[in-house]
Image (tube, rainbow, N blue to C red; front, side):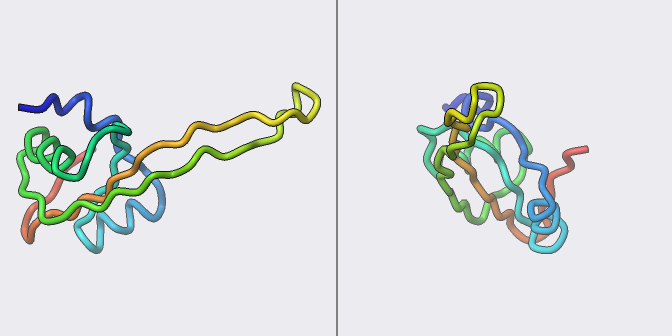
Length: 96
């Protein structure tokens, strides 16, 4: 059995993510970098008690930003892995 608390880090609350949840029954999570789509599906089913139809995973690369406090030297914002989970018809997650 997997440890769902180590797989699912947080729910991504963005304008696009809330639109996907309202219209297409898709929920966006930030997940562990070593997790695959099967582990993410099991973690969502175990945590929320719903049936998962599909999982899409995206890796976002780290971005370089200029740091004004260090006289324009480059700093790095960390990358993360994002999963878009589609639930079966009639299923929903209450996150509030």
